Amino acid sequence: MTIPIQEAPLPHFNERPSGIKIDTVVIHCMWAQHAPLDKAFDPLTCIAILDNEKVSAHYSIDRAGGVWRHVAENKRAWHAGKSRMPGHDGRENVNDFSLGIELIGKPEEGFSPEQYLALASLAKEILARYSIKNWLGHDDISPGRKVDPGPKFEWDRFLAAIGAKSKTVVE
Image (cartoon, rainbow, N blue to C red; front, side, top):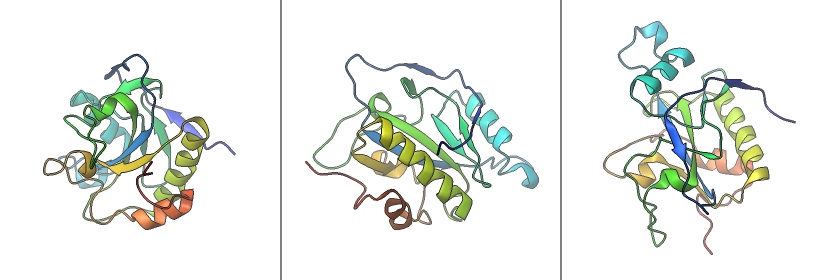
């Protein structure tokens, strides 16, 4: 079953380097921290912030589990910024070979059950298209600079839902 995806294109992307294979998914989180309280988790407000900041992700998932596509998967979204893969991998410029997914929420508060369901469904669809070896948080690739998806993100819950044993496949 294909999950419904709402289109909300953002212009902040470019071409991936030639010959690059997508093998990583980076999970982020965001909210409209300077918006009125009733708009803090509004998906359109959050998407407008991404646009205003001239950044993007491939997808975002709102609190109700709605999935929004911002950039086509074959394009290089601008979600990771200055980044390096952890451990022995060490590759830099993670945007080159990754897909970015924003969860709308605060890193210190966690995410809704609907978001976990939508994230797992989207992840399974991505797995049907790509050989994903790394499921990482923004904090994993930009330590000290980023904290998302945050301490309340339930990695075990997410990984179990997609049938992964760990965040990284070691070869």
